Amino acid sequence: MGCGWLGLPLGEHLLSLGFRVKGSTTSEERLNTLHSKSIEPYILQVTEEGIVGEMSFFSSVDKLIIAMPPGLRSNPKRRFDVMINHVKKACIEQGIKEVIFISSTSVYGNLYGIITEKSITEPETNSGKQLLQCEELLSNSVHLNTTILRMGGLIGSDRHPVFQLSKKAFVTNPEGSINLIHLTDCINIISSLVGQPIVKNVYNCVTPYHPNRVEYYTQMAIQLGCNLPLFKDSATFDRKISSEKLLQNFNYAFRVKNLLISS
Image 1 (cartoon, rainbow, N blue to C red):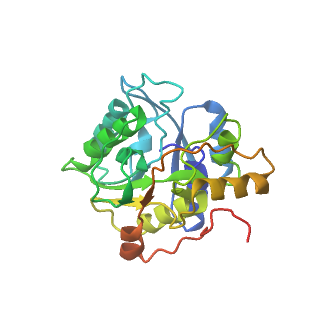
Image 2 (image 1 turned 60 degrees about the vertical axis):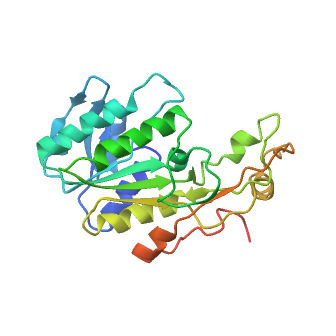
């Protein structure tokens, strides 16, 4: 559910592994894109009022992957938690029992130190607060087995925070650690889950590579040919989000270990 920056290449990868893949989109134009990639396309609009469109999307589904971004930056008044509650109800009505929900490490707020899945959740942003509510809606349902994946900052060949940082007047917390994950690893982690029964669980998904911000973003700016970010000395807020549970439970090996830094 959600065939955007993450969902579309994920669908393609799952097809290559032999899975049948349905994909939802909100636009007619996107239907042809999904169809051309052999993803079964469905028009589906999830709103605060309910779900409009081809509800047959939910029929004959063994596992539902919810990869919908909250979209609260462009629409801060949106109630993403209400939207996900409609999705939860549709799953129950259609007999879907296994769900993978793509969440974010923003649910930890400004905790510092080593962050594990047992750390308290104290989200401070609107997005973080609503994502945590979504996690609870799904994980507390007796009808669903939901695995929650708390992704770090998402990067890829066409997406990187340094592009925004290079446009800022200055960037704070130069000595703080990065907590990112590459699209390739997002796809491989989700695919690892799809191949086995889904159970109620939570995993941090952050590449175990944590150079400080000034070191990493300066190197990336040089490599990508954009302006060097200007860092301002400030009190260091440092944390490292641990993916040790993921590594142990799935024996997972991160593919993009240096997060695009050229060796």
